[in-house]
Length: 150
Image (cartoon, rainbow, N blue to C red; front, side, top):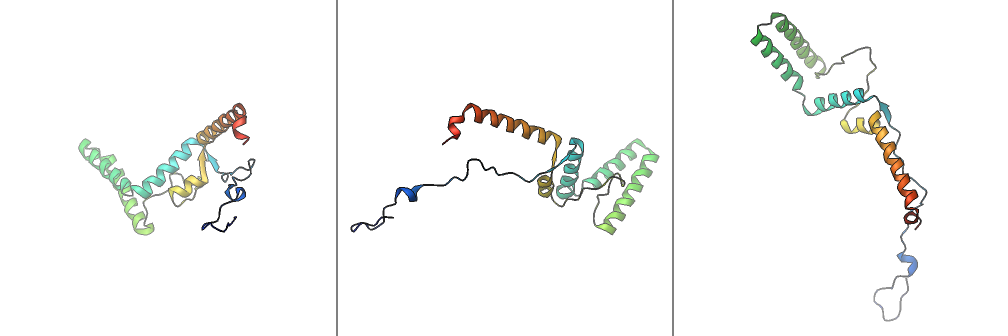
């Protein structure tokens, strides 16, 4: 800054007005995500949303099945729903949760929240879309190269 005798506030120099935008060639890269098949990705998101935002949904489904079985007088269906209801109540009292794995042999993906899951995993479609967007950006940079030189 230059301070002249009559100035109350110092005048900025050209050097102090420059803003550094960083290196043109540096790219911020997101951490690599684990790619899941589309069906598995959507299924896991469904599980998390149901668990976190609609915890009573399984109980409501069973009540609905039970009512349908009563309406149709389907004794076998009534018995199946009662067995599921007993398991649900037992799981809630033991674990405090109503989610159980559909296939116990399948390795389970552990996740706590929707944000954690989305920051760790992605789907095949999302990766494909990101590649298309990146190719489009590259074409844009090549076409308008003079905009990116400054």
